[in-house]
Image (tube, rainbow, N blue to C red):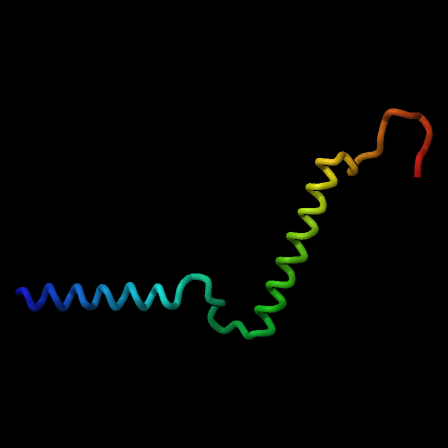
Length: 73
């Protein structure tokens, strides 16, 4: 009985170690290096545009001013 428990614990430790080494951060199966670069580049592009949009909203640059009736280009 004790050998069975030791074996089960050993298998559990190996499984946890194997999962921690592979991790969730690895690229999806079947993804090439080029596809990974394209995905990362697209994520950076989207994030930079969303950040710029947020900054414009905070600085109130996203809407024209309504303080004057004159058109300011």
